[in-house]
Image (cartoon, rainbow, N blue to C red; front, top):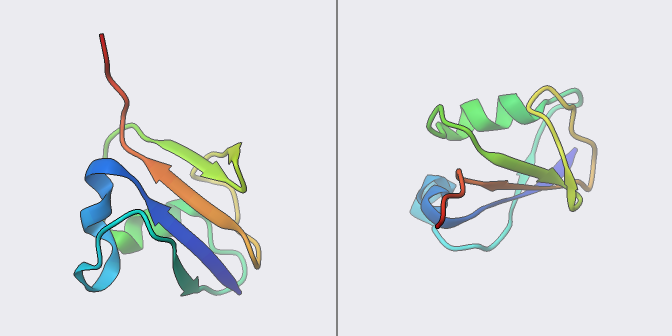
Length: 79
């Protein structure tokens, strides 16, 4: 299955092949792949994060499906 993955802010540097930026990358993944599997594969830091699939809040245990768009944001802080 094909899934588009986009990483934001400080996570951009974890895009494969050193290709940073907020451009989605298409990944060919086996059926049943979870968000947590993608996070591990990309080597993202173990910290809180905001995760959305197709613009809806998601959890790391959620399975991805063909054509999904996975967006991952680092923790948000502000004042």
